[in-house]
Image (cartoon, rainbow, N blue to C red):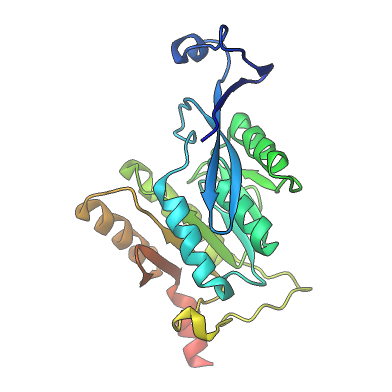
Length: 251
């Protein structure tokens, strides 16, 4: 695996590479790695350190990518937004593999946005649209039109669960489809193992270990917010508004 260390001003030579301690008070440093995704290799620049923990690729990214490849009809034709994008690697993979209409999102932090843009260019795709949003804050787009929300390994900080659920609830319950787009909510094929996603839906996966109590705390919080949680694969969950299911049943 090839590794290079960067600063915003350029590539450091072996003799002048900054240490993490030296960088903490001055400028960001990065590590660029090649990562293997299904069917392709991506070049991903990661922060050597980031105070908001958006610095690395976590195991859930790769396992989620594999699951999405196996259930590709869940994402085909969708308009998606990723929460907690970090380096943007998963979104870049989905754009390169399926030309998915996807937007990245993470903390209101300029360095994260710049790094995702860098990774897009490094992997020879147009810069993916990005929204700076801290969970629980007012969302920049008052009329969200993403019919698919995705995320991987975002359940690390229990104190953020309430804020995360608030953001998820807004994106799902205030969803307004674009008039020019008509997407079937049940896109499916035989290889999908009968996985059918509602519209809109929040699809999440994780591999980082969290306690059962923390897991229950998040899922119970979702249900208390009027969201239905369904386990649809190995550590893969679909979350959607309960009110949508009630209205569909009545119709």
